Length: 408
Ligand SMILES: *Cc1c(COP(=O)(O)O)cnc(C)c1O
Image (cartoon, rainbow, N blue to C red; front, side, top):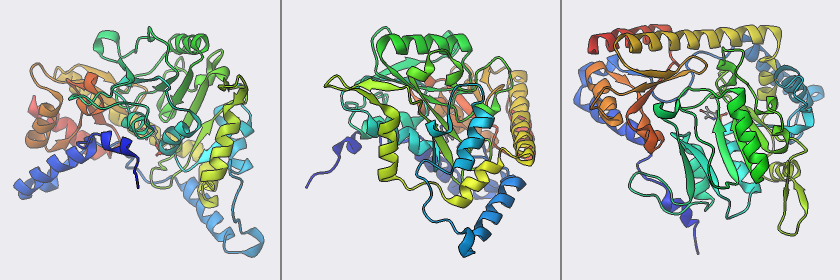
């Protein structure tokens, strides 16, 4: 009997459990102040599901109650009505077709599961700070060695993103096989220009690397010059996979729907010299291990692209970006250096001189009763920063701003 001992390499003190532990300790010690607590930590949405989505889901549930309109197992890649709507609304003019879209129950799973189609021994590059899923799934897959005392895993190529390089990771000097890029970025809220992404695509094509592009936050982009998709970049169809989600734009974090785009032109040479299609491998993987997102959920997701759905999603984005603008303004007014927050729902803040990430977390919890996320929890280069999420009600954000001002 053996187990996958790669799991034993995972760091026990994972970020969100440690936040929960500190918050619990504090609430136990301060039962009278617990009601004041405002959470700006975990990246979950707070506003309800759009009306158009709920209506579509209710209709779909009723269809399931009638033999003539009942839907059993659906197509493993997702229903045509949703894949067509995705192409029409998100990839028009980008030379992506509906059969290159794989609908799923969310992009966290897809960004992790994608490793099923890659073999052992690949060199993996990740930005630092980073969405922890990319790291932990590679640890589980055996693509790393052990972690050091800072939580950095042997075998991974870390690309530091700090104020010194404007949060733009340097293109690696060495050859890497897989590169995870997330834009707009979680946790830093920063974006990549067309030129920066072009440099990555050029690197990938030169080195035979694959870019795993996570665009979960593309709907928050306000600046028309910033690309929403890696497939806006010349050459990306030969070297990139893109992950998208309905979680943050449509408020689907509890409903669950996302999708992965793999161009058919994307191939990798096998050890025997055969050109193998990653699209074909992923199709095989999904049809074996996954049976599709539910019919009512896919109807709800398609409703995001209806005229009413689009208007309601725009209002949600406007709400969260309004929150981000308030948080940015307040942090700047009290003399804190801020990044992100203009094309993403996250504001990335430099800690005041002499305070580290967890120090800032404790200070905000104890003195302002506000839960933020310490930057160091996303990687060693996140030390000295903290993340404030704008996923909140306007009242809560206004109160957070008042408390930040009082704290200064
Ligand atoms: C929220 C988020 C996702 C989306 O995850 P789902 O599983 O679709 O809810 C993907 N990537 C990043 C970086 C995220 O923050």
